[in-house]
Length: 329
Image 1: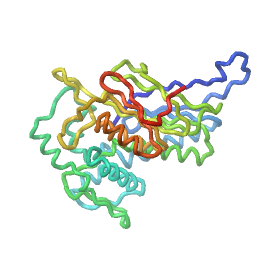
Image 2: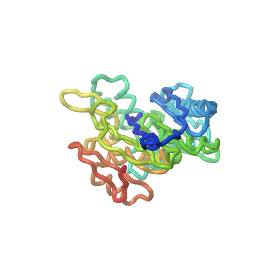
Image 3: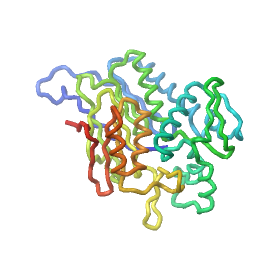
Image 4: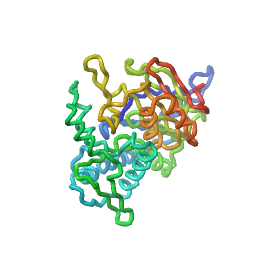
């Protein structure tokens, strides 16, 4: 699971203006660990804490469906079905289809059947062990998104390769953020911040009608040190980086974004990619795809993709922006 540390620089301008006598109401805020990541949601314009309670109940419900590591989840049942068809919920079916779409357009750089490799590297618990070449070759042989067979009419999914496995970590948090935003809008919330472990999604702007300023973590720096900030109003801000889950062995960095073709982490000129888009699931997938492509190809992809902008951080800490990127004021 990706990912990534974001720092919020949320400045309520009214409080900075001398003589301003009316302060905006403080937001309701709550934080929990869900999907193996820190989830924080802030909502404005209400004191009804049940809305936050319902948001987190929704997030936990999605975790129970989509997590690869929860034995009772729909994804876990599918991965252990030995190639048999498994009936899944509409949400799981929808997300698998989204994952297959991004697997296809990336040419397999983003592949939702990367689970055999994810399990082998186990970055959550790995302190520096590199899998041996034979084990990597075996795991890699079962990574192929074309082995996922979806029957929309029957509501089932099966894996043509019984040893394959689905890992939705590259897109699930973004999808859950999108669904949480939909829920908040249905409850009449017009201003909110949703942060699922670095997948940041804004509902509207700040209550004073200005945009949120969201700091981007400086790679490999202390938590809280930003390299830049972006402005977001009714937008998703998602970053994929090699500096959150990694270990270093013999002077080499091994990070969690794995190349399905080699079994090893992608190697190129990038430390991180930040995507701005309306959909957090879209940003989740595209940030990983762009990181896998490197600066030149990643920029090219974003510049020909509608309604998406990107910020790239190279290994020399230079910042590169897509053609229409709007930087923070």
